[in-house]
Amino acid sequence: MRLSIYPPITNASGPNSVTREELERLAQSASGAVVTKSMTHCPRAGNPEPRLRERLPNNIGSLNSMGLPNLGYHQYAQIISHLKERYRKPLIASIASAPCPHRLDPIEQYREIATALEESGADALELNLSCPNLEEVPIAMDPQSVRHVLKAVTREVKIPVGVKLPPYNNTPKLFEEIARILLEFEIAYVATINSEPLTLDIDVKTRTKVIRPNDGFGGLGGPAVLPIALAEVHRFYRFFQKHRARIAVWGVGGIVTAEDAIKHFLAGASVIQIGTLYLWEGPAAFARLWAGVQEWLHANGYNSVEELVGTVKDL
Ligand code: SIN
Image (cartoon, rainbow, N blue to C red; front, side, top):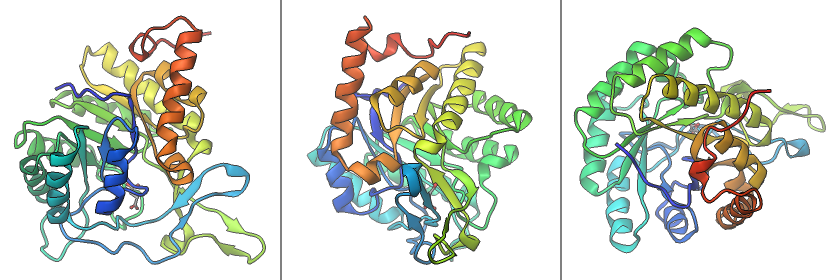
């Protein structure tokens, strides 16, 4: 099922997309869609502070171990109904699972939240299978669990379903296994990558780690992960082309300049998302990036982003 996003730039689920006010700000911005923070069955306070270092030295990126702080899906269902009445842009509900007092298993959590958010008027769902900051191993690392979640959700809802995946880095067999499972379902898009897991920074003045949870280890986003994101976008794009799958690839990771965005499109992304950049620059980033992308297209003889998608040449 196709999902049309224009301009093809949205926020990445996470940064400043938790509260009603933050989501309203996104709805009023030049973002092509609003993507919520990943919502869980129960509200969550998240991990202990400090859990986010917004800017690492030399502007290489951001480091977080937020632990999915969010209002719980009942609240987001109400917020989405409200935004739906006031704004016309696509509203994408990001969904995650986490241990919860109701003791529902993860598959049941995804299914229940997905059904409720479809009823609330969400235009699409983004299944976050890749949060690196919980004690549990992310579902995206276990092919059978990925299959079970996708089966449970896609047979329940009619709106487009996207999947947010981690970088598979140097695990080509796992990458291939997951990509093949995606072919079994009607998936609208793959958003890749979530933050690079298990990364660490140290403040040499205080000689401490820069975030507290999980022994200081967290997910890295921002410029440092651009080449990792491009590689994941490109291999998913090539895989889907080879198998004639109509699954779009949405590029997430390391985009700061219009040139970074163009690289994602060349690698195979048809939509891009910004996370760390949105933290750094706020809503102004959408219009700046889109103007830069359009300028580049014009200067290089392209009429649209679609003409560019996946056209990177081998050397
Ligand atoms: C978090 O809340 O820990 C970040 C969410 C994610 O990266 O999936």
